Length: 378
Image (cartoon, helix red, strand yellow):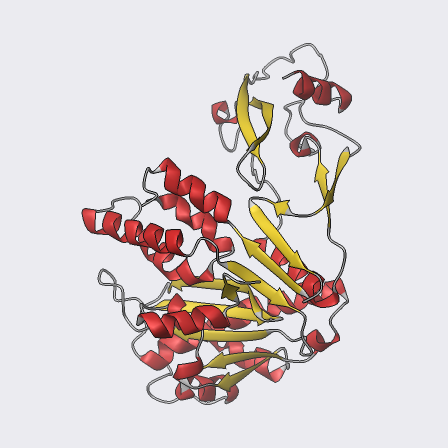
């Protein structure tokens, strides 16, 4: 608490002023947290003095609030490039980060001019993710074994939990299962509880899995897009899935229920392609900004296992079965024409994103998981 008050004072967080007429005061409270290292050992105790923002009313005391943080995709991309180029990886921490933001509202809080940085040395544990490196082999792995153990212990299972959503950031193999459970989180039944326990049992048996990136001769981002058809028993909507691979490991993925009801497998696959190309364009933009990958200037390859969807993405034609498709999804053709992406056909047997759209036989599932870059070995 003394450290927090010292930081507040050093950053000139507040000024002592007379309360203006009509102004509303906002109370504050202490929030305590235990910070642990990669092995789960207590590193230090933290205390944060926070404003009681819940006493404010939207439109009166504030208009918009958000906390800017980096995307997990950005972190994985950078770590993949670190593995490929065998770069040094250092970690810095911004002390009392949220004391450095500026507020436009008349609250008289959180104003600072400088960031106080702490050098934490070589990065080995970042936002709950353990970083494993083998410089000789040119391999970098990401794991969350400590967090998985924490979740298992918390629910006294070691033998269940909505907390698995945080594990998805290094485990694309559970993205579909977690997404399905999330659809019923507001009103779960005993069946959903049993399904969650199965996910936890799977994680218990694979908690040593690492998302691996390896030095390679082919520095290129490759995407895969897939969809099931009308799998939602409540709405008959389909599930889209995409995954992007760089230097042997997944850098970005998503499994999500489509917002519109597709009337054919082609339409469901085409909608999924749209989602994949939209994200692919962002990936190109982000990686281009890093200026370390010349190959990113070439069209980004996205593979789809539906011939009709591939044909529709490449050709400016609409038949009686496709003329009703929402015009926004036709943006795929524009992206193909501008050579931002290229949509290619691939055999269903090689479609590694299948586990993000549907349940699969164990052996086939394991093959796809390996191709995503997940392994227990370095």
